[in-house]
Length: 81
Image 1 (cartoon, rainbow, N blue to C red):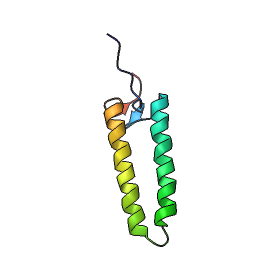
Image 2: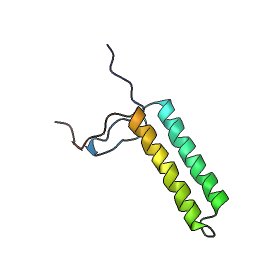
Image 3: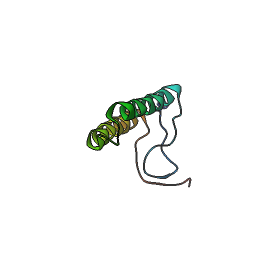
Image 4: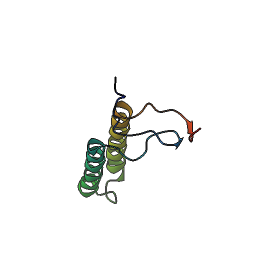
């Protein structure tokens, strides 16, 4: 049985995920940045900072959830043994 193909590999050091490994991961990251720019244009951080911060927090939460579901299981790593 083949090992699962993760979109986001685990980082070598620390906790979390590294750069995407597949085109789907890159697509998720590109959509995240496009939505971030669109949110900056819509919410204008200088005029409505609270709305922009809430929007950005929601986007980041969704990105972390996608990484958690499609990435390698997160755990603290100290590098290769």
